[in-house]
Length: 96
Image (cartoon, rainbow, N blue to C red):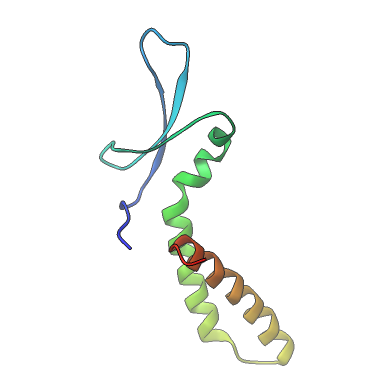
């Protein structure tokens, strides 16, 4: 799946002659990736952080996957976290 490269940033834009400020998610080159309205504005930092969060989750899942050994209790905890991370990464990759 092709994605817009990170970083993504939150930018506010006011259109001349209007009293509305748009909350935008923009790429490094300034391309608008999303224009958020109302309730969605509160999610703008999370949306902008999505590429870094996906990368961190993917890396953490790889590391945890290589560490699943030790006592049964440790394995269960690591396996639960590993499964949560993998599920989130799969969702982000469009596989629900």
